[in-house]
Length: 434
Image (cartoon, rainbow, N blue to C red; front, side, top):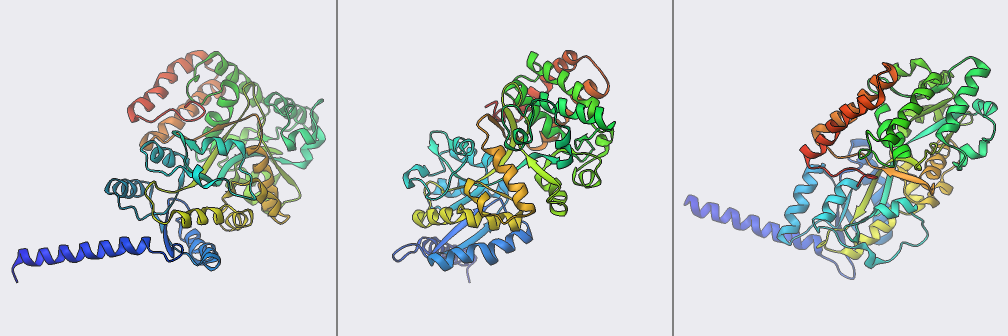
């Protein structure tokens, strides 16, 4: 057979298959029968097994809609969605991605304005999540799952609260639960026991840098990057030098805080929820998870937010909205928490969690997210420069707190280096800078 003729036949067959597949993804009699859900989240083997074996079958049983789950990398999702939107033949009905990716898609006009579907009944999204889900003039996504960093308190520490601070203040995160109150508390424990019971994961694999850029900086300056070497930042570093007098010196060796908490080496600790989970699971009655303290500008904290969106030219959008409705129901969100460790995005989910370790974690996380003075910090997307970003804050800490160098001199030296990372990558400054 002629080579050109054979090539032409192959191309024709592929085109027919492509058209048939495209039509298949859009078919529906009285409502869609099949939709594609592409997600950068819940892609690991164990999590994918939960999604495909338990989570989505429940939706299909209820609605009759079949969902093809497509775990996908950030880069591949961007390439596929861009190509489909530009060709006008979109096959993806629902996208699950982090805030940064959804922000990018919204900026390019790839997402449907979800405002047209109205509000989802029976659930309340924290105001801060609702605020950030509106991007580039549209309701870009529905908050789906979260992860964050919190303070853990051994209940023994409540015996040493400083004057003017109550257990309720700490647990509920009132205006009295401030960084100055934390300093007074840690100092009081030391003076009464002779031990430094405050701890942080400052070890080489610890997430200490997240506390610096996502918690202290926003709380004291209102920003992560913009005011890196400002007078407010100088005050922040002066505060940290005072606080460090009462921090367990072994903190510089700790990569995670679960073990120090369980051993009683610390009574007050900050870390990622996943890294303190073991302590809560083993001793759920000994520990309480609380919101972080507030600073002069508010209560800065990092939140990793995953959202659900519908591409602008997506097929079967009514079915897509039904899936979003299902995935954000409180009882479904609790199942996601149990099986993946991601926390709910709806406030009502906390009341659906049975008593035990997950309840302890979820209540603390939910309280922190709902704080009215919260300053949400997003981790910037700097690609290969991400290590340099976090390294800058660690350098500042080592030079100022551990080595005693002049604060303003160090900040003036490192500040321009930090700004340069964003200039070189073209990445926008992260919230709350943006």
